[in-house]
Length: 123
Image (cartoon, rainbow, N blue to C red; front, side, top):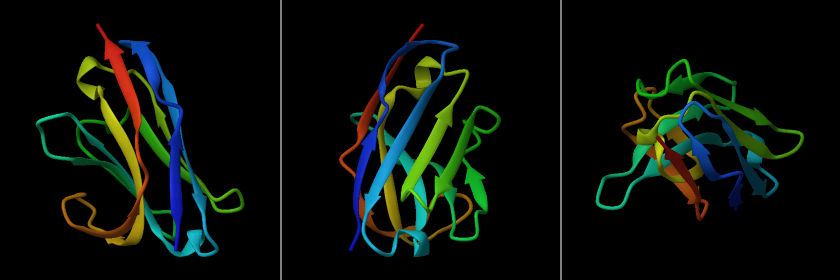
């Protein structure tokens, strides 16, 4: 069992940066594949970035070169460093944990989700 809590969202101007954190509470955090997703009202949830138990990372094409996912297993925390933010990055961001996510971020088995943190980027 894992409980996830995101933080670090906020409002920023285009070109700015934010760092999201996801604190995980549970004894088996290091064994889970972790990912960041985002959703805009009225649109489908989309995968942003994933990191597996061995540290391999994948990103959505829309964020490659701007976002960096990382995990600190000692602190049970997942991060998403977001640079050069664009208005189209505005969304609710969720972290998730589970057994697997495909590299294209389209298919996944994720059992645990946080409640989300809002990111708003103004032009």
